[in-house]
Figure 1 (cartoon, rainbow, N blue to C red):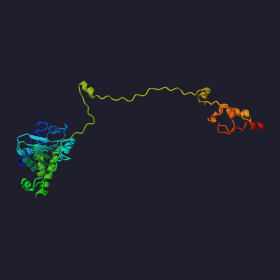
Figure 2 (cartoon, rainbow, N blue to C red):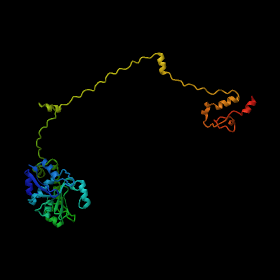
Figure 3 (cartoon, rainbow, N blue to C red):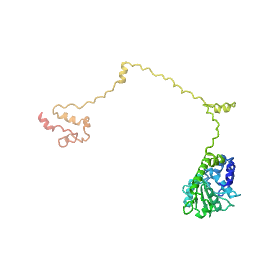
Figure 4 (cartoon, one colour):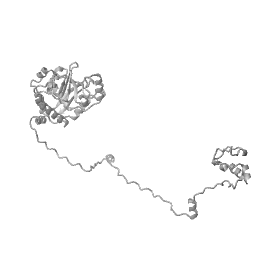
Length: 355
């Protein structure tokens, strides 16, 4: 931090930002910190203002981003509203832009609500980039042809990288996490790593806790390490049941709870008396009807030709085979018999001779 922003932070300042959205043409002036604390209503307003305007979807923006933009704005000495080029981007919007441009990251910080692309009309874009890089709060992207700077709350990095000479001019003491284009860190890299990472982690923790006081934060970082926690008011134990009393009849009717009734007992069902019936009725109920026997064919005694013919032609023997095709008595011979699979009696003449 610069001395000016350190003083403002230590005093539990109130911070206000004025934006102009270049796509929606909307403007907003929002006080997002009051007495060092984040104003939740103001953060909600900023979430909508910085929404993905293509699909009208807001997201919860990282409040640290507003602190970074506020400090960059003060350091730059701008008097114009901050122009928003891009803020939150939904996954579908990011995917669409990525298909059209290789410069859009697949896992962009914009999708997490942790990045904004900004322009200050009265500040040179290269100077705006240098100010953001010097603070080492997160990522800084420089887009000179489009005249805007990307700022996010991710890891400290910059693209495109400065040359080593440019980085030395920006950090004469060499204490920076930024790497030059040749990839060789400046001499104070390790010292900057210990200080900057600890500071940024503390800022992230403070933001997630709801803001807190910047004065207490700086005291914890550079002064007292174990401050005495402020006494917390005792929280009364919740009552087992809360009763609401009201003289308004309508209110009483609204909060009244109908007491459930026990299930109704089923009606009494009278059953017929199971008296044993008399013997005749019982026999009629349980008697099993017997099938009526059909008279069978007359028995054949000996070799009686007439009886044999009568038995063979009797329709009650038809169940033996349905292939019997005899049309006349003369066809009933040992050679022409096509009836059931039972050998017929001997020829009638032979039977008569044996009698």
